Length: 328
Image 1 (cartoon, one colour):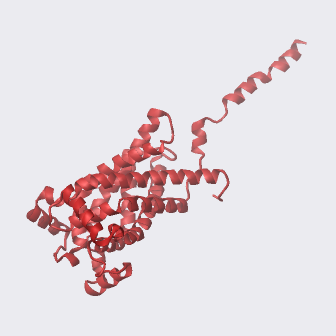
Image 2 (cartoon, one colour):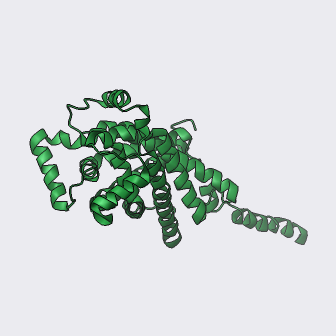
Image 3 (cartoon, one colour):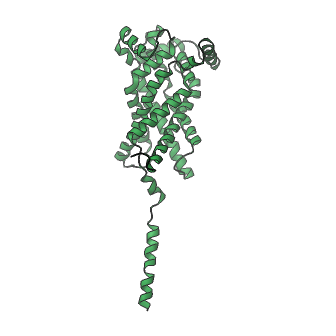
């Protein structure tokens, strides 16, 4: 009888062990499917298009000041926006935005997709697969992603800059810009300003992605929530954009001067020569940092919208894959 009682009692510890061995939430999160490269491309293109369309009028105004010797101020900037609106209508504030979309959608798609891939590769290399990367690989992933995107889409950035600072009569459409530049200035002109672009994108993209990923990591550790709320993502992205763009802004001015030299009558050919001319003629603050205050307005907005939109749409696609709506 005693033996029979023991045989009935023996399963109890086994049942307890079974309960303890159930997967923990963190293990379940590790099993979440990664977004495919196509998912990242689509999410990145959408995020870039939304962000750039929102701030297009401010972006166009900033470029006009960057490529001229006229002193920048908030009053003059808004006066330029108002005069442009009164003279050519509200849609003129988005002049060049079609070229921006032609550039920013592939640029953002490549940047976000390659950032995911670089994070995965660096995570495997450093032994942090499925976890947050340490600081230097986090910075390196962002820099490599920005460099990859810039190298593959640079001529479109040149076209966009030309359309932003010229009248409609000079360049009627995107193809017209390509044809005129190639015929009148040579194909190599399409890559004028490429060196300062790469020099600027390395710290800009590295710092931006590093700051955003770091803020998300700190947030998760403090709140114990794996995913921030949308407004928190927006704030993290705004901080990342503010820091990243401020660090690389002088090279952005140099890039714009070199890109638009053919239509402004200037002779900017080298990065150092352009920087020296700007400092000599306009000074460091009024020259190399011209329009930075406007960038502090539009930059955080654009980067915040871009990063948060990408994260939200990517998470949405992951959930749809988990629910079986798409073949993963």
